[in-house]
Length: 268
Image (cartoon, helix red, strand yellow):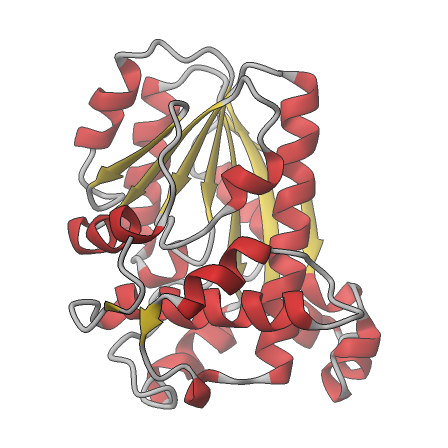
């Protein structure tokens, strides 16, 4: 393992994974933290990167809430299907496998080759965890995973789909639906207003990345294909209001509440 890994090769969307990692580590250090991700704390210590400018209390709370929601959903899925296959798209340096592993699941992480290189230098190997160096839109990863003939599959697309166009999201959903029978997917999404505003303010964190896709109502996705069904959804701003400041109060306005949400869908 490299004790001071240089991650200057991460640019654009890939660089955002460092912000997410750092905020998870900060949340873990809080006595009243929403999540506990000790692995992220250790990883941050091994990376040569200026994390200080990424600190944001509100964003940190949102990242923690998102992590909590998806962790609980994955645990529920694993309890129902103990030998499930979990596919994480745009994984970055997410350490969820180590938080939810029951000793029998198989997990495939998918992200760009430059991200995989960083992962390989930082994360411990596991016989049931395989990191594939592909874009989520390069469907070679599907061929690699299909070889294991997975039965029950849960796909996670965390902090990813908002960087795609709507057409690309549809293509991804169709690829998953057509190759993994009765699979499920969980992902976070933005409202249209927030997605559009981010294009204006994309330079705020000095990272060359902006959002492209937003959606007003997750039920709209069911109209894309009759084989797509919304199982449940969560609104970030409904949770841990004590950590959200003014936005916690503004969440009572539907237009605000609907800007950050998580959807859980099934493909048939």
